[in-house]
Image (cartoon, rainbow, N blue to C red; front, top):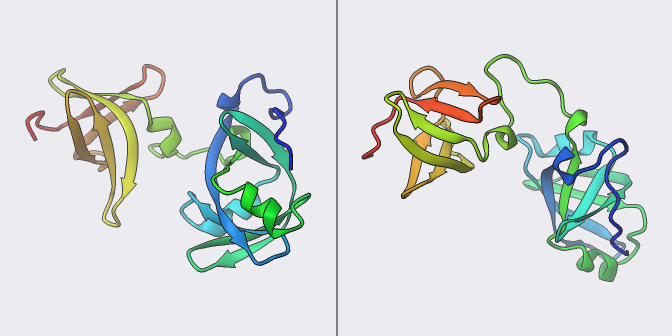
Length: 179
């Protein structure tokens, strides 16, 4: 399978794509792929079409022929991937969908991708850094903030997270900067 730069229709930037999973390994000998989904429920990734496969900033559209849950992930078959060697060549490839394919969020509901990169500031105005990524812990999600040092701040709206302003790119938190 050759990689061709092909962005979604009506798109001029790869920023319109959200990475939702990654090809982990071949599955069998007929071109099936083992997928690690980054969605809360892995099989939800099967609901999005088309998929865009990306390596090193180059994206191409991929047609999902079939897929099913398997263990903690998925196994899928993509058009044009017919054997184990082709599947092995795709290992590590990101799977993205167009942002416009995602359902609208409800009030006080956010996609993780919207929070990454936001500046985090305490209620008294102390800058803690920027959200690097989030962790799912079971009890609540955790913001991993990189600034003068790494901080882990629980994503508990109301108690810790006081406000999120996507327009200004800022999250206000009730958090001790020394913690």
